[in-house]
Length: 81
Image (cartoon, rainbow, N blue to C red):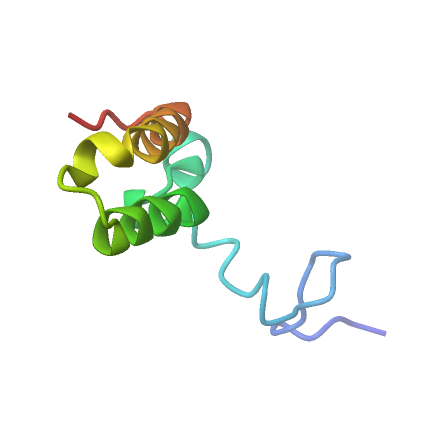
């Protein structure tokens, strides 16, 4: 029995999650993440604190949240000023 030219040579079944896996570049380029896609919980908590703070100085009031967000982003290789 011969294999169809369209049949996959991989033993892994094709799913929506892995159809484009062969198109992604190997190595570091495929592991890189966008800043918008990481630390979402920390960013949300920071933003909520800044927006809804009743303090006269929200930056000072939310300094801990900002530090957590910066630390998280640094873990992914991003530097926040």
